Amino acid sequence: MSIPGLIAPGRLLLDEPAPLEGMLRVIGFDLSIVSTGYGLPNGSTGRIKTRQRDGDRRLLVIEETVAGLVAEHRPDVAVLEDMPTRMRPNAVKALGKVHGVVNAALLRADVPYVYLSPATLKSYAADNGNASKEDMAAAAFLAAGVEFPDDPKGDRCDGWWLRAAGHDAYGVPLFELPKAQRERLAVVPWPNLLPQRWVLGADQ
Image 1 (cartoon, one colour):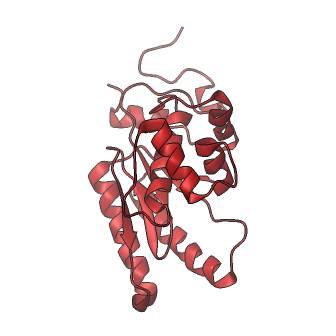
Image 2 (cartoon, helix red, strand yellow; image 1 turned 120 degrees about the vertical axis):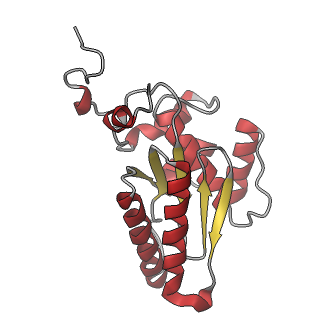
């Protein structure tokens, strides 16, 4: 027997995220020092564009914008695309700094976050771990009829797919995908959101 309002014994030890009832708010971030793409809980997308001449001050723009988006949209979880395995040393430095300030903004707001590797995201979206930006955009159109104008590098599209992956992982998918593609998300260590959502009253 369980008591209403309490977590069942062993519920926090699950290896997979438990399906969530009620509205789920997921935000996705495809991080970049030049153009960070994002997918918002309301389904819209955008980019945080910075200027190279501003140097490291671009990090402040990214951190402040992420903090503002989080404060406005109050996500339950943030899904971030992880760093590619092959990058130039200078690119690794720049992207590592971006990850640091975004992680800090999410931690200050008490928003749990999780990383998806580029290969996992592409396999989930397009059934191809090496899918191109064009493949990802085509998959989004086939899955939900959405298009991404003014998105030359696919930043907004990736942010949109990261949000979709979060919804799918927590049992509230935004659209249907083949089972094999959805199962690619099982390798991700998704945070358990049940305690946080109950404390905040999200499921009431």
